[in-house]
Image (tube, rainbow, N blue to C red; front, side, top):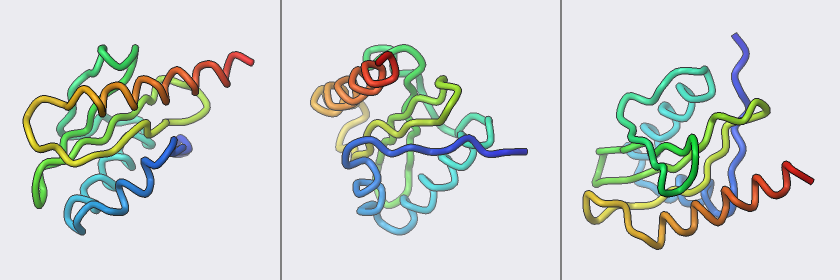
Length: 110
């Protein structure tokens, strides 16, 4: 089984690398599941960001979120990664992910 390529947008890769070791390892495993065509073990849809966008919820050494879209045929795209201080995803994080998704879609159309 071939894995779908994983593409990191903006500073999302650096953000995941800055997670504590347990959270970083969990994020990596969940993204591997996405690449393999499976669902992460803990996720929720994020329609406020865009169609097909999901948030991987990580509960290791705190609360973390990774927003991604895997509906594109060429790759799975990590839009944003961040530490969560509340259960609800902050509006600034949603806006940043939405901007990166719009840029991705704009580039794919041209």
